[in-house]
Length: 58
Image (tube, rainbow, N blue to C red; front, side):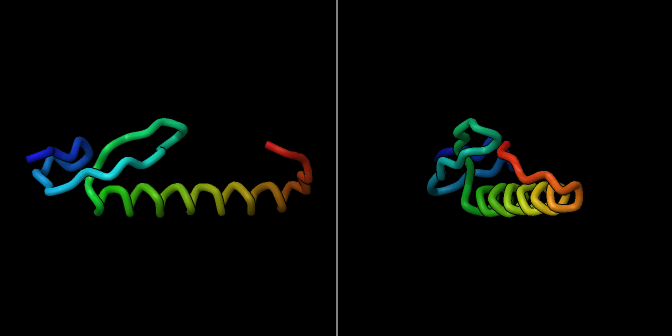
């Protein structure tokens, strides 16, 4: 059985997810949490840019 490196649990299947530009293999639950945190970080960055009036690219 494969082991999830994030939560150290045995799982049936590992999913490959890009986190901070690197692909990592983790279970479905950890992958969902990683996606949610990435979406929150992106949204907060967009809000900060709009507050500062930045209209350029990253």
